[in-house]
Length: 134
Image 1 (cartoon, rainbow, N blue to C red):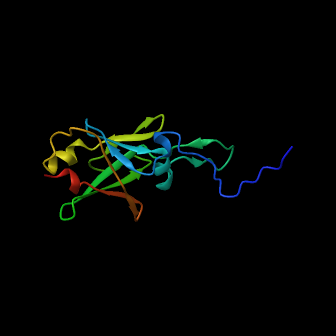
Image 2: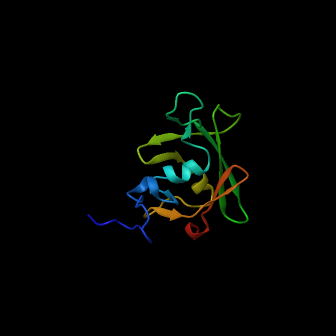
Image 3: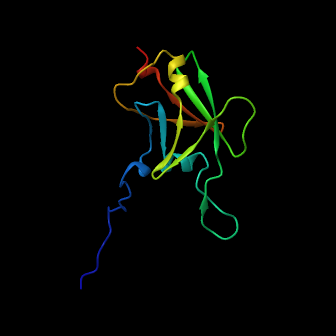
């Protein structure tokens, strides 16, 4: 039997939506955040005792940067004061309704889903929607 050398090989992990490193706004106004991205903002942390995984965040608060046409999202374990969005679990990640923010920016309908990059800034997931605004 020959010895297998791995040289320039890397393990293939990009099987589906859960592995993507971007976020998607669906035509119905739901923001989909893949498991890969959610992990970067603190979801799917290991339990301190007993192993396994849990999702500690159930709520989110939306923020807007009107000048730069950006949306920010902070995630919370407990229900925050004031307005908030509930987070829905999905097989490949999480989702939340951001349609009110889209309407605020004059986006009343999406003809197709919109995929975009993001950044994490002071525990806030931030992304631009300027390419959606006409």
